[in-house]
Image (cartoon, rainbow, N blue to C red):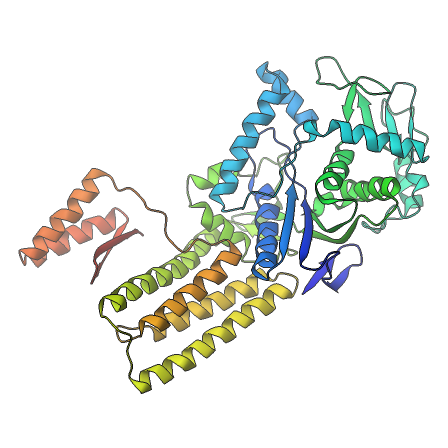
Length: 480
């Protein structure tokens, strides 16, 4: 299995620190509002990475945090006249609802920064004791970047260049810094802000120290994979490496994975999605128009390191593509039930030898799926292999197929979809009473052999976006 490592800028063979186990940390959202679809991309991508490791038999310790103390959270709390904890608690719960809608598995641990302050204070003391950090007169504690010789190794930035760049930017309130490139580990509270007692001042942690401490507590001093959006490479992940390796005296993460940005395509005009441009959508807004499985399928339609353009047309294409898979899975379930009712499996030699050939072809497609996933988690090619399996299923499963073959195809399709986090059973939708009454009236018309009326009702339902399908198991419906 090969992973593109941001640290080395090349694909590397995955070798875990401990055989059969994966320690994985993914930076989670800052919880001051509903998550947007940019937040959703790393959630879906790295959940799929986790699922593939589990499919291959690894035991995955997957840690993803919630940043629940931050300027934006404090600002929102002040606007509403409530404590910061009220805001963070509310949006953690809303985030979990959206994650469930996208079928993102809960992390092994979802740590919250405010519950790990003691560990942060301990790491900061260690850094000061080792000469990697210092306290300014106002109680701010800074990391001394010049003390860490490998600073810049992840972002491939040169510290001398960084320092000259920083010197051109005068930041108010940072006069206590030894060097402009030094970054904050602990900062004094402002009026009305939440704070904790420390040896230096009443204050709160800097953002970077939070993840270093949470990764260490729940995964250990060395981890296999650290992941997040590419916007976190510098300074956040760079600073995490500096703090963790300076404090612990050993390499922090073996592999660094970063997903590319999500762009917004508006009438052919592509822009990077950002709150400052006001061109973002929340996952909750998308859920009002689509099942969030469609959003997940859309996110997996491109390689995670490729920029992805979000547009209404591409979401519709994803909806149609997902529908093809769900329809094939539904057809297999129905065929399996019908075959079971027929009694024993077909025993005709010609049929069974054909089915054996089809099984071989299906297993080859499963290997194609695995090869795509093992090449730096190429979900686009993995999805293509699933579509080929759907095509094979549709063309080879018939009323004459043996129950064993149908179940084999159903289970294989389900297993591959599960790696992608795609649920193969449609969510049960509730029709309103008028539509249910129309479907029932059509059934009665068919029984009375009034086919003109039955066709008329079917046409009206189609105009309302309800497609009917008559099967041996009865009438089925779906939304157009």
